[in-house]
Image (cartoon, rainbow, N blue to C red; front, side):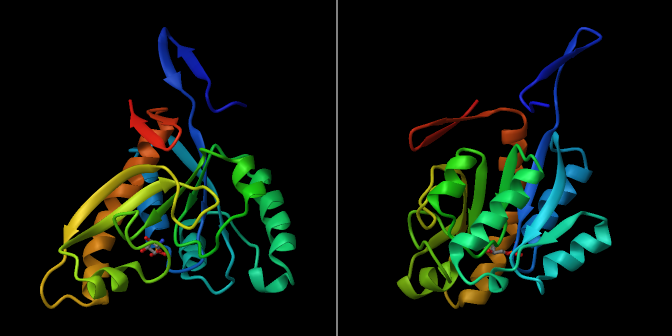
Length: 216
Ligand code: GRF
């Protein structure tokens, strides 16, 4: 059933719930923030499953505890990236997601994957993009000496952290910060920002025009 359907229930328009799929390779704290917001009724959606590229991801244990369906598509079990991605695409599609949330998913997706779900894949990155894309963004920020950093939720394109920006939140970088203290400050904001972006998407309140995302 299309997720974009509005139903008329007793004369009131109701937007059908979006099917959210989360992809996580590690700790899974952003995954949990989204799950918490869904469970609290703040998001008009349901998390239909979690896919991990790493069989040892803490995110998987968190899913087990919460009764969330999870599937491992282990990158290490595939000799090439393209065969792994083919399987990833097949598993993703089987969930029929309206929205895919990358939450600490440590892989760049190829254009065939991105094209299949363009405008429906989000990622969170722990810097104010376009500054400090890629790995160890918090360390990059501390070493560069910036006074403000933060986090960014963006739609995913083929590049590394280059897709259209949905929301950003800033935090101060304090004298004496190291990568860990800054990461902890940013992570608190991530856990608010990501569910907010998912909430807006699930209410059809994000419009993507070229590189720009407008909040309706
Ligand atoms: C977060 O800092 C996120 O911004 C980055 O990877 C980290 C994932 O953390 N993309 P978690 O697995 O959500 O706890």
